[in-house]
Image (cartoon, rainbow, N blue to C red; front, side, top):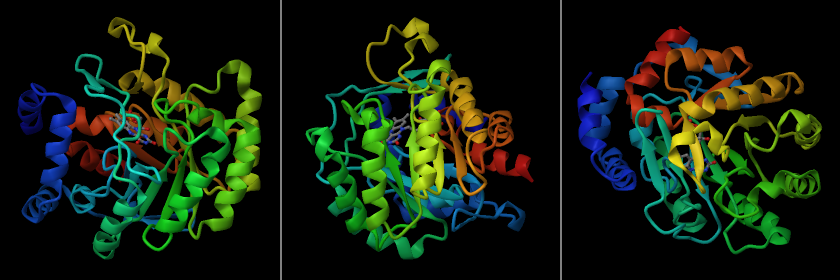
Length: 333
Ligand SMILES: Cc1cc2nc3c(=O)[nH]c(=O)nc-3n(C[C@H](O)[C@H](O)[C@H](O)COP(=O)(O)O)c2cc1C
Protein backbone atom coordinates (compact mmCIF):
# COMPACT_ATOMS: atom_id res chain seq x y z
CA UNK A 1 0.00 0.00 0.00
CA UNK A 2 2.79 2.36 1.06
CA UNK A 3 4.79 1.47 -2.04
CA UNK A 4 1.74 2.05 -4.29
CA UNK A 5 1.54 5.61 -3.02
CA UNK A 6 5.29 6.08 -3.38
CA UNK A 7 5.17 4.54 -6.87
CA UNK A 8 2.50 6.99 -8.04
CA UNK A 9 4.94 9.80 -7.26
CA UNK A 10 7.97 8.03 -8.76
CA UNK A 11 6.17 7.16 -11.99
CA UNK A 12 5.63 10.84 -12.79
CA UNK A 13 9.31 11.07 -13.79
CA UNK A 14 11.62 9.60 -16.43
CA UNK A 15 12.57 6.03 -15.39
CA UNK A 16 16.30 6.61 -15.68
CA UNK A 17 16.28 9.75 -13.52
CA UNK A 18 14.37 7.87 -10.82
CA UNK A 19 16.77 4.95 -11.15
CA UNK A 20 19.81 7.17 -10.55
CA UNK A 21 18.09 8.70 -7.52
CA UNK A 22 17.26 5.27 -6.09
CA UNK A 23 20.84 4.04 -6.58
CA UNK A 24 22.07 7.12 -4.71
CA UNK A 25 19.62 6.53 -1.84
CA UNK A 26 20.61 2.86 -1.60
CA UNK A 27 24.24 3.91 -1.21
CA UNK A 28 23.51 5.94 1.97
CA UNK A 29 24.16 4.17 5.32
CA UNK A 30 21.05 5.60 7.11
CA UNK A 31 18.84 4.40 4.24
CA UNK A 32 20.51 0.97 4.38
CA UNK A 33 19.85 0.82 8.12
CA UNK A 34 16.17 1.70 7.64
CA UNK A 35 15.70 -0.78 4.77
CA UNK A 36 17.26 -3.55 6.81
CA UNK A 37 14.84 -2.79 9.60
CA UNK A 38 11.85 -2.78 7.24
CA UNK A 39 12.63 -5.57 4.79
CA UNK A 40 15.51 -7.88 5.68
CA UNK A 41 14.16 -10.98 7.35
CA UNK A 42 16.07 -14.23 7.44
CA UNK A 43 15.36 -17.87 8.14
CA UNK A 44 18.04 -20.57 7.92
CA UNK A 45 15.64 -22.76 5.92
CA UNK A 46 16.02 -20.30 3.03
CA UNK A 47 19.77 -20.86 2.81
CA UNK A 48 20.96 -22.82 -0.15
CA UNK A 49 24.27 -24.40 -1.12
CA UNK A 50 24.54 -24.80 -4.84
CA UNK A 51 27.04 -24.48 -7.64
CA UNK A 52 29.89 -24.13 -5.15
CA UNK A 53 28.36 -21.09 -3.40
CA UNK A 54 26.30 -20.50 -0.27
CA UNK A 55 23.22 -18.36 -0.92
CA UNK A 56 21.46 -16.64 1.97
CA UNK A 57 18.17 -17.20 0.16
CA UNK A 58 17.28 -18.07 -3.47
CA UNK A 59 15.99 -14.60 -4.48
CA UNK A 60 18.60 -12.55 -6.36
CA UNK A 61 18.90 -9.08 -7.84
CA UNK A 62 19.11 -9.44 -11.62
CA UNK A 63 21.80 -7.74 -13.70
CA UNK A 64 21.33 -4.19 -14.93
CA UNK A 65 19.99 -2.63 -11.73
CA UNK A 66 23.35 -1.97 -10.08
CA UNK A 67 25.53 -1.78 -13.15
CA UNK A 68 28.39 -0.04 -11.36
CA UNK A 69 28.43 -1.62 -7.87
CA UNK A 70 27.20 1.55 -6.18
CA UNK A 71 24.23 0.14 -4.30
CA UNK A 72 25.35 -3.28 -3.06
CA UNK A 73 24.88 -2.61 0.65
CA UNK A 74 21.42 -1.16 0.02
CA UNK A 75 20.39 -4.19 -2.04
CA UNK A 76 21.73 -6.50 0.65
CA UNK A 77 19.59 -4.60 3.18
CA UNK A 78 16.50 -5.26 1.02
CA UNK A 79 16.95 -8.97 1.73
CA UNK A 80 18.27 -10.33 -1.56
CA UNK A 81 20.12 -13.63 -1.30
CA UNK A 82 22.67 -12.73 -3.98
CA UNK A 83 23.36 -9.94 -6.46
CA UNK A 84 24.53 -9.63 -10.05
CA UNK A 85 26.50 -6.43 -10.67
CA UNK A 86 26.86 -5.17 -14.26
CA UNK A 87 26.82 -5.64 -17.13
CA UNK A 88 30.37 -4.28 -17.06
CA UNK A 89 32.67 -3.93 -20.08
CA UNK A 90 36.47 -3.42 -20.18
CA UNK A 91 36.25 0.28 -21.08
CA UNK A 92 33.64 2.69 -19.72
CA UNK A 93 30.87 3.50 -22.19
CA UNK A 94 27.93 5.89 -22.27
CA UNK A 95 25.41 3.62 -23.95
CA UNK A 96 22.68 4.78 -26.32
CA UNK A 97 21.27 8.33 -26.37
CA UNK A 98 18.55 9.08 -23.78
CA UNK A 99 15.65 8.49 -23.30
CA UNK A 100 16.29 4.75 -23.42
CA UNK A 101 13.92 3.19 -20.88
CA UNK A 102 10.13 3.08 -21.34
CA UNK A 103 7.66 2.13 -18.65
CA UNK A 104 4.31 0.46 -19.43
CA UNK A 105 2.28 0.62 -16.26
CA UNK A 106 -0.83 -1.32 -17.29
CA UNK A 107 1.24 -4.07 -18.92
CA UNK A 108 3.73 -4.16 -15.99
CA UNK A 109 6.61 -4.01 -18.44
CA UNK A 110 9.78 -2.06 -19.08
CA UNK A 111 11.53 -1.66 -22.40
CA UNK A 112 15.18 -0.64 -22.37
CA UNK A 113 17.87 -0.05 -24.95
CA UNK A 114 20.55 1.25 -22.57
CA UNK A 115 23.40 -0.41 -24.49
CA UNK A 116 25.71 -1.37 -21.59
CA UNK A 117 26.20 2.09 -20.12
CA UNK A 118 28.77 1.47 -17.38
CA UNK A 119 31.85 2.91 -15.66
CA UNK A 120 34.21 0.23 -17.01
CA UNK A 121 35.84 -2.69 -15.20
CA UNK A 122 38.63 -0.71 -13.48
CA UNK A 123 36.28 1.62 -11.60
CA UNK A 124 33.77 -1.10 -10.79
CA UNK A 125 36.51 -3.31 -9.34
CA UNK A 126 37.72 -0.38 -7.19
CA UNK A 127 34.22 -0.05 -5.73
CA UNK A 128 33.90 -3.80 -5.26
CA UNK A 129 37.18 -3.91 -3.36
CA UNK A 130 35.81 -1.43 -0.81
CA UNK A 131 32.38 -2.92 -0.35
CA UNK A 132 33.00 -6.66 -0.71
CA UNK A 133 34.25 -7.23 2.87
CA UNK A 134 30.87 -5.95 4.12
CA UNK A 135 28.84 -8.27 1.90
CA UNK A 136 27.32 -11.35 3.52
CA UNK A 137 25.80 -12.65 0.27
CA UNK A 138 27.42 -13.82 -2.97
CA UNK A 139 28.17 -11.06 -5.47
CA UNK A 140 28.48 -11.96 -9.13
CA UNK A 141 29.82 -9.85 -11.96
CA UNK A 142 27.88 -9.88 -15.21
CA UNK A 143 30.26 -9.10 -18.07
CA UNK A 144 29.95 -8.15 -21.73
CA UNK A 145 31.89 -6.69 -24.60
CA UNK A 146 32.36 -3.03 -25.53
CA UNK A 147 30.19 -1.87 -28.42
CA UNK A 148 33.11 -1.21 -30.75
CA UNK A 149 34.92 -4.47 -30.06
CA UNK A 150 34.53 -6.67 -33.16
CA UNK A 151 33.00 -10.09 -32.65
CA UNK A 152 36.29 -11.89 -33.42
CA UNK A 153 37.93 -10.01 -30.50
CA UNK A 154 34.97 -10.25 -28.11
CA UNK A 155 36.54 -13.04 -26.06
CA UNK A 156 39.39 -10.71 -25.07
CA UNK A 157 36.87 -8.32 -23.48
CA UNK A 158 35.43 -11.06 -21.26
CA UNK A 159 38.93 -12.24 -20.31
CA UNK A 160 40.06 -8.70 -19.38
CA UNK A 161 37.05 -8.27 -17.09
CA UNK A 162 37.53 -11.65 -15.41
CA UNK A 163 41.25 -11.15 -14.81
CA UNK A 164 40.62 -7.75 -13.19
CA UNK A 165 37.66 -8.89 -11.09
CA UNK A 166 38.91 -12.31 -9.99
CA UNK A 167 39.98 -11.13 -6.49
CA UNK A 168 36.75 -9.25 -5.74
CA UNK A 169 33.72 -11.33 -6.78
CA UNK A 170 32.16 -14.74 -6.07
CA UNK A 171 30.98 -15.70 -9.56
CA UNK A 172 30.87 -14.45 -13.14
CA UNK A 173 27.92 -14.25 -15.52
CA UNK A 174 28.77 -14.35 -19.21
CA UNK A 175 26.26 -12.13 -20.94
CA UNK A 176 25.71 -13.30 -24.51
CA UNK A 177 22.07 -12.29 -24.57
CA UNK A 178 21.47 -8.55 -24.23
CA UNK A 179 19.66 -7.31 -27.32
CA UNK A 180 21.13 -3.79 -27.25
CA UNK A 181 24.73 -4.46 -28.25
CA UNK A 182 24.91 -5.26 -31.97
CA UNK A 183 25.92 -8.87 -32.66
CA UNK A 184 26.34 -9.80 -28.96
CA UNK A 185 23.79 -12.59 -29.28
CA UNK A 186 25.89 -14.16 -32.04
CA UNK A 187 28.24 -15.27 -29.28
CA UNK A 188 25.63 -17.93 -28.43
CA UNK A 189 26.38 -19.61 -31.75
CA UNK A 190 28.33 -22.82 -31.07
CA UNK A 191 31.44 -21.74 -32.95
CA UNK A 192 31.84 -18.53 -30.94
CA UNK A 193 30.55 -20.02 -27.69
CA UNK A 194 33.12 -22.79 -27.61
CA UNK A 195 36.02 -20.34 -28.03
CA UNK A 196 34.52 -18.03 -25.42
CA UNK A 197 33.90 -20.70 -22.78
CA UNK A 198 37.25 -22.38 -23.17
CA UNK A 199 39.15 -19.08 -22.66
CA UNK A 200 36.89 -17.89 -19.87
CA UNK A 201 37.24 -21.11 -17.90
CA UNK A 202 41.01 -20.93 -18.21
CA UNK A 203 41.13 -17.54 -16.44
CA UNK A 204 38.18 -17.59 -14.05
CA UNK A 205 38.83 -18.50 -10.43
CA UNK A 206 35.10 -18.67 -9.67
CA UNK A 207 31.94 -20.42 -10.87
CA UNK A 208 30.88 -19.23 -14.31
CA UNK A 209 27.23 -18.72 -15.24
CA UNK A 210 25.92 -18.08 -18.76
CA UNK A 211 22.93 -15.81 -19.36
CA UNK A 212 20.71 -16.80 -22.28
CA UNK A 213 18.31 -14.95 -24.55
CA UNK A 214 14.66 -15.95 -24.75
CA UNK A 215 14.63 -15.25 -28.49
CA UNK A 216 17.33 -17.52 -29.84
CA UNK A 217 15.28 -20.65 -29.42
CA UNK A 218 11.93 -21.20 -31.05
CA UNK A 219 10.35 -24.61 -31.42
CA UNK A 220 12.37 -25.12 -34.57
CA UNK A 221 15.76 -24.38 -33.03
CA UNK A 222 15.59 -26.87 -30.19
CA UNK A 223 18.82 -28.34 -31.53
CA UNK A 224 20.53 -25.01 -30.93
CA UNK A 225 19.49 -25.09 -27.28
CA UNK A 226 20.81 -28.62 -26.96
CA UNK A 227 24.11 -27.55 -28.48
CA UNK A 228 24.41 -24.67 -26.02
CA UNK A 229 23.71 -26.97 -23.07
CA UNK A 230 26.23 -29.48 -24.37
CA UNK A 231 28.97 -26.85 -24.69
CA UNK A 232 28.17 -25.26 -21.32
CA UNK A 233 28.38 -28.64 -19.62
CA UNK A 234 31.54 -29.59 -21.49
CA UNK A 235 33.16 -26.40 -20.17
CA UNK A 236 31.72 -26.83 -16.66
CA UNK A 237 29.49 -23.78 -16.62
CA UNK A 238 27.86 -23.98 -13.20
CA UNK A 239 24.56 -22.20 -13.98
CA UNK A 240 22.40 -21.15 -16.90
CA UNK A 241 20.46 -17.94 -16.39
CA UNK A 242 17.15 -17.93 -18.26
CA UNK A 243 16.49 -15.32 -19.46
CA UNK A 244 17.46 -11.86 -20.57
CA UNK A 245 14.92 -9.42 -22.10
CA UNK A 246 13.05 -10.24 -25.32
CA UNK A 247 12.85 -8.52 -28.69
CA UNK A 248 9.60 -10.28 -29.51
CA UNK A 249 7.56 -7.09 -29.92
CA UNK A 250 4.34 -9.01 -30.49
CA UNK A 251 4.33 -9.47 -26.70
CA UNK A 252 3.71 -5.74 -26.26
CA UNK A 253 1.58 -4.99 -29.32
CA UNK A 254 0.27 -1.54 -28.31
CA UNK A 255 3.76 -0.08 -27.85
CA UNK A 256 4.82 0.09 -31.52
CA UNK A 257 8.39 -0.83 -30.61
CA UNK A 258 11.29 -0.97 -33.02
CA UNK A 259 14.15 -1.30 -30.53
CA UNK A 260 14.97 -2.44 -27.01
CA UNK A 261 14.36 -5.46 -24.82
CA UNK A 262 11.06 -6.11 -23.05
CA UNK A 263 11.10 -7.19 -19.40
CA UNK A 264 8.37 -7.83 -16.85
CA UNK A 265 4.95 -9.42 -17.25
CA UNK A 266 4.97 -9.93 -21.07
CA UNK A 267 8.25 -11.88 -20.82
CA UNK A 268 7.15 -14.32 -18.16
CA UNK A 269 5.64 -17.17 -20.20
CA UNK A 270 8.39 -17.08 -22.79
CA UNK A 271 11.25 -17.18 -20.31
CA UNK A 272 9.59 -19.92 -18.23
CA UNK A 273 9.21 -21.97 -21.42
CA UNK A 274 12.99 -21.73 -21.99
CA UNK A 275 13.61 -22.69 -18.38
CA UNK A 276 11.48 -25.83 -18.75
CA UNK A 277 13.23 -26.74 -22.00
CA UNK A 278 16.61 -26.32 -20.30
CA UNK A 279 15.52 -28.43 -17.34
CA UNK A 280 14.78 -31.31 -19.66
CA UNK A 281 18.24 -31.10 -21.21
CA UNK A 282 20.69 -30.38 -18.38
CA UNK A 283 22.48 -32.81 -16.11
CA UNK A 284 22.08 -32.62 -12.32
CA UNK A 285 25.41 -30.74 -12.08
CA UNK A 286 24.10 -27.62 -13.81
CA UNK A 287 22.04 -25.09 -11.89
CA UNK A 288 19.20 -23.08 -13.36
CA UNK A 289 18.52 -19.45 -12.51
CA UNK A 290 15.00 -18.34 -13.46
CA UNK A 291 14.51 -14.68 -14.34
CA UNK A 292 11.89 -12.85 -16.41
CA UNK A 293 8.51 -11.55 -15.36
CA UNK A 294 8.51 -12.41 -11.66
CA UNK A 295 6.00 -9.93 -10.24
CA UNK A 296 4.27 -12.08 -7.64
CA UNK A 297 4.85 -15.04 -5.34
CA UNK A 298 2.92 -17.15 -7.86
CA UNK A 299 5.38 -16.19 -10.63
CA UNK A 300 8.29 -17.08 -8.35
CA UNK A 301 6.83 -20.51 -7.59
CA UNK A 302 6.22 -21.10 -11.29
CA UNK A 303 9.92 -20.58 -12.01
CA UNK A 304 10.89 -22.93 -9.19
CA UNK A 305 8.39 -25.55 -10.36
CA UNK A 306 9.81 -25.21 -13.86
CA UNK A 307 13.21 -26.21 -12.48
CA UNK A 308 14.90 -23.04 -11.20
CA UNK A 309 17.33 -23.52 -8.30
CA UNK A 310 17.55 -19.76 -7.85
CA UNK A 311 15.45 -16.86 -9.13
CA UNK A 312 16.18 -13.23 -9.92
CA UNK A 313 14.07 -10.17 -10.53
CA UNK A 314 14.35 -6.62 -11.75
CA UNK A 315 11.09 -5.29 -13.22
CA UNK A 316 9.07 -6.78 -10.34
CA UNK A 317 11.04 -4.61 -7.92
CA UNK A 318 10.04 -1.49 -9.88
CA UNK A 319 6.33 -2.33 -10.08
CA UNK A 320 5.78 -4.08 -6.75
CA UNK A 321 8.48 -2.61 -4.50
CA UNK A 322 10.86 -4.31 -2.06
CA UNK A 323 8.03 -6.06 -0.19
CA UNK A 324 7.94 -8.53 -3.09
CA UNK A 325 11.29 -10.01 -2.03
CA UNK A 326 9.99 -10.56 1.50
CA UNK A 327 6.71 -12.05 0.26
CA UNK A 328 8.50 -14.52 -2.02
CA UNK A 329 10.75 -15.63 0.83
CA UNK A 330 7.75 -16.12 3.12
CA UNK A 331 5.95 -18.11 0.44
CA UNK A 332 8.99 -20.32 -0.06
CA UNK A 333 9.04 -21.12 3.63
C1 LIG B 1 16.57 -1.32 -17.34
C2 LIG B 1 17.13 -2.69 -17.47
C3 LIG B 1 18.50 -2.87 -17.67
C4 LIG B 1 19.03 -4.15 -17.79
N1 LIG B 1 20.38 -4.30 -17.96
C5 LIG B 1 20.90 -5.54 -18.03
C6 LIG B 1 22.30 -5.74 -18.15
O1 LIG B 1 23.08 -4.78 -18.14
N2 LIG B 1 22.76 -7.01 -18.27
C7 LIG B 1 21.94 -8.10 -18.25
O2 LIG B 1 22.42 -9.23 -18.35
N3 LIG B 1 20.61 -7.94 -18.12
C8 LIG B 1 20.08 -6.71 -18.01
N4 LIG B 1 18.73 -6.55 -17.87
C9 LIG B 1 17.87 -7.76 -17.89
C10 LIG B 1 17.51 -8.26 -16.50
O3 LIG B 1 18.65 -8.66 -15.79
C11 LIG B 1 16.53 -9.44 -16.59
O4 LIG B 1 17.16 -10.52 -17.23
C12 LIG B 1 15.29 -9.09 -17.40
O5 LIG B 1 14.86 -7.77 -17.13
C13 LIG B 1 14.13 -10.03 -17.08
O6 LIG B 1 13.79 -9.97 -15.70
P1 LIG B 1 12.59 -9.07 -15.12
O7 LIG B 1 11.37 -9.35 -15.95
O8 LIG B 1 12.46 -9.48 -13.68
O9 LIG B 1 13.02 -7.66 -15.26
C14 LIG B 1 18.17 -5.28 -17.74
C15 LIG B 1 16.80 -5.09 -17.53
C16 LIG B 1 16.28 -3.83 -17.39
C17 LIG B 1 14.80 -3.67 -17.18
